[in-house]
Image (cartoon, rainbow, N blue to C red):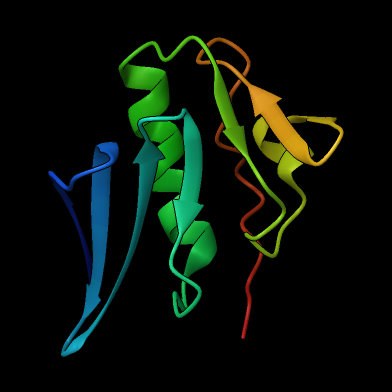
Length: 102
């Protein structure tokens, strides 16, 4: 069973740890305003959804990320601007069409 726990970490406005038994990965919203995840994260979309939900609830005015999530970020309200994907709390969304990744 997965658990997602929000905590503090240097360099992050907020950071989530995704735990599955002994396996721990994570990601967060950096001080620079970017959503990131650890490369070893096995459930990137689950983590992305948790981070987006937090950005919406905290009214984050600008959110950036890169194409590291393994999913179409436009589904979540991001628009590509060069190498970055950009959105804000009022454009972000949590689509109901979850994609299964193996």
